[in-house]
Image 1 (cartoon, rainbow, N blue to C red):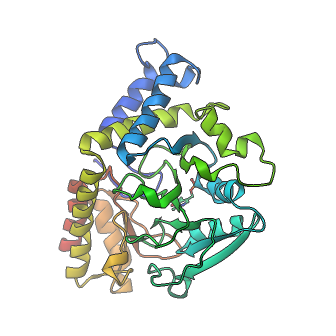
Image 2: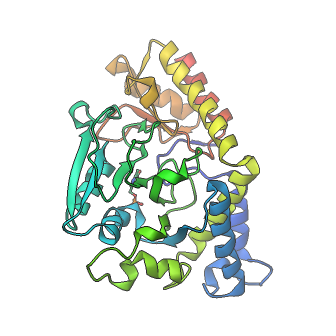
Image 3: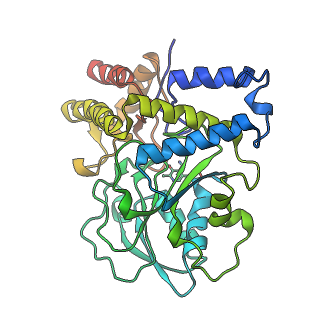
Length: 352
Ligand code: PMP
């Protein structure tokens, strides 16, 4: 039976991407070689890197003020790399605390400079996005997690600040349009909306670099990776290739404007059923804060949890279990999730 993959990550990829990715393992670019066994400096892979970067630039409408790099270490490495590359010990950065990943970013940044937690939704187990908090002047940057994968919240209105935003977009990159002029850095682990695990994309406004006084090891210096076009060392060749295929797919869907509309329609289908069906309840009270990527909900009766999970499984719905810190259910409906699969889940809920 075809499984409907609602995993939070590593997550669903478009079927056509998986087919092309599989083909390239057998024979890549007519070389008579697998993509797994070619040099990262070969002309065939150089083309891949160039196209991947150019798709990122095109989809997000980036100008040359920004560098785009593909490195390893996961989004978790960016928690400290962003602070290490931007923040001096005597400077301050603002952080919005909206869940586990923000909290981790805050902890790491404190190793390098002053960290001001501007607001936190910890008081309600991170089930809302703080609003209306004051943001002081003079911050080096303001860090946000755009989509909180575990809790199912998403920032819809970006903080109003003169400081550049540094955003962890691991779980909603390329899912909607962005006002790029607000962002100094965007980073994202690929394994949700972009490709397989193993590569992290970082978009950096270049003028923000070179202002820290500390010495940076080459591998941890964004300037080195920008200057070397992500080939200072061996980059994650295959994950980058799969990202390129996924970004081609995003472009073929009509780019971010189209993606945004499709994602809104998918999320509406599911949230509407959660609202309508007395058996279920959304864990995020305010609709404005609800994520279009990770839909978190519970059964109104605790006793219904296990039977609903069974019913979903029987219909081929996979990976619906909520994160252990929230419980209940989490339906991750990233870009590649077809609306037909969301409908399958909604039908199970209707029948329950
Ligand atoms: N940030 C967010 C928003 C995430 O969802 C995750 C992974 N689930 C991470 C950071 C950590 O990513 P990685 O495992 O790539 O370090």
